[in-house]
Image 1 (tube, helix red, strand yellow):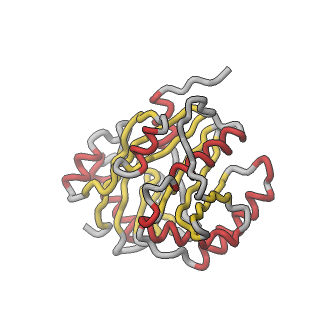
Image 2 (cartoon, rainbow, N blue to C red):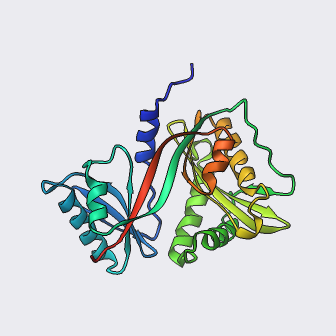
Image 3 (spheres, rainbow, N blue to C red):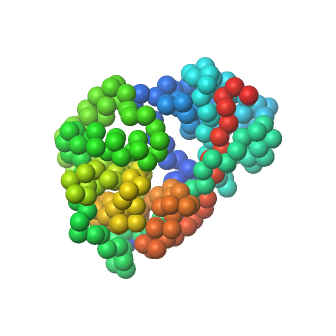
Amino acid sequence: MARTLTTDDILRISAQWQWTPFDAVVREDEHVKVVVSNGRATVLRAEAEPGGAEALVSRVRELAAEADPDCTVMWPIHAATEPPDLAEVLARVGAKVEEELDVVALRLPDPDSQLDAPTDVDVRRIDDPALLPDAHQVSSAVFGTPLPTAEFQEREAADVRKQVASGPARVIFRYVAYADGEPVGAAGTTLEDGVAKLWGGSVVESHRGRGVYRALLKTRMDEAAALGADLALVKARTGTSGPILRRAGFTVHGREYVYGMPARG
């Protein structure tokens, strides 16, 4: 029998979704965990301190500045974030909403799927680390981030080899989409407890509107369902991937706001 996941269940899974880049600097204590990479300090854990939200914000900025004094703190906030006045305090210290993400999900397999992948887009799963530079090229162009450091590339290549060698136990998959032999899209999937967490979907500007994102989405959903996943979960940018996912049948369960502020206030 298929399990039943409520909206609260889905939002809880989404809130626990974390990723630490291979070359990141991690700063943490009993209440806070901050991951710093490429000038961004992402808050992965922030639990209430005795001094309330104000003390929590101060501690996050302190830890972020230890790793990179010039970094920008990126703090995801959602409906269940504690303390409940955290968004208000962030706004009061000058933090601005930098991203709005819809938390969307779809049961797998989806018998009503209307996804039609274009025939001129070739989606390849990265089982050979030699394809990783193509994914990096796309992600860097789309998100405006530097190409990964040599350390990051070496560790990611090692991780791909490890994941492939794990066979049926593999949980992380990366993909590159090609058009006319050129890399034009990239994406990834992490499988965890029957949930396919779809991340990093990106398409270079010159090929948007040509079905590249749909092709990446269909491949990931089909492969995840074949591996036993019963739910696809995405944190979708409201102005780009969000509308595509809704048209593909995904349901919006909530919204996450990512606040940004300088570490040194």
